[in-house]
Length: 212
Image (tube, rainbow, N blue to C red; front, side, top):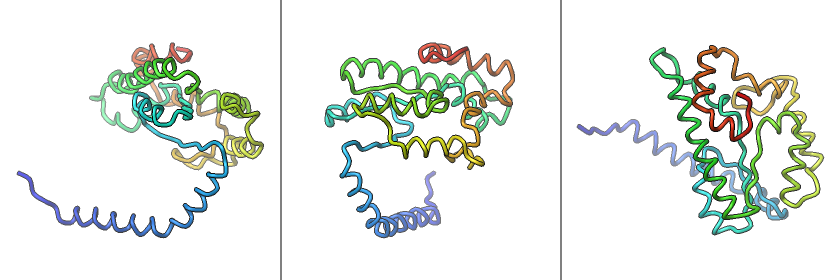
């Protein structure tokens, strides 16, 4: 039987009012940021956890849209998910990693199909390439967009982020040694768990040229 919880409803209402007040307060700041963006030819937007097949409508509406498909070793993604979700032995390592890689498999297939239908609109880039050589990574992306090279300020910022004096947490962007994150997913993983993830993600690993 359905029963309403007034306290929960009130919290949502308070949140709605709070967000409305926040929008009013930051409106002036946003106007300044938008004005700055309008002075530049390219505008970049980071979209997390989107599905590749959702992009076709945008490409039809925005023919000058470029899509940077940014991927990472699926084992690192799966291992992170497992550490959060696998708190009991009842959870299945293979099933959890299979879910992660099934989505990546579908996105890769959609990426191939959309790249054929919209030549020049897509580029695939790997997290590991960015970590090991951010300057080269930036140059390749800028070249794809028809630009000469990434800005010196961007290269300095990335170098500082990957060689910081300390880490700023799991959700932060500063790392003492960014390269350590490439294989950090193996830490704490049992050999049989690694084998299970490799088995579940075999097709993705091969498609993206990751060593198994």
